[in-house]
Length: 315
Image (cartoon, rainbow, N blue to C red; front, side):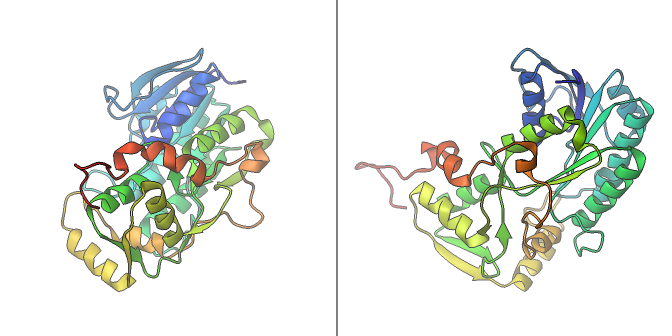
């Protein structure tokens, strides 16, 4: 790598951990900037590089500036998917993103990779999607040559998407669909996205560009659930649920401190989450995307498979 000192904001998250590990594998000295440096979720170093935790809150410019000290490159992989009293989409994805870009520019950081998401749209009905779009715009203004990466739904060992569905499939005979389950998704392997970050930091031609990162195939939501059930060796009844019923449920759950379902999540499921035609993709970075079918059976593991033998319970 051309840049051997890299600060990764959000390095304890699902994607951030993989980014930090891939950078370290390339010999980079990685500073993982997180709100809780003592968190056990921090990645272990691999390769010739090292990984060092440091405190930073993207909402606080002073801590961001300190985390960027001596860095040659930076990655903003901070993601917030459910708002709380202490953290809002605007605070994290707009003001936080601006703080990282602004302080990186002031510190003389040579390269910045900003993680956003497919479908970022300033006119979306989703506050999350609007915040992502506004954050992108401000980051592009604050840091000349920033590279923006927009991944689709992430999959891989420990992911939230398939593992949540697998848990439901394990305990419930019915699996609800969002609408008819026709929404299109293009899941992307988390390591492929991490590799993309390493590539853009090392490739000067990627400066100022936007990449949309998806897997090799597009699926409907229903097809993904069917694929999941096939991997688990289970049969479940798939039940179409109208969106207005999902919205009603989200409204009832909104009073909880950490609701399992939000209005923004429902809005996201109404819209296809696939790579836009003509966009720069993983292929433009020399990465052959990994198919869901290749990895899903391996990381769901035997834990989820039905037991056999006389002590097996019917499922």
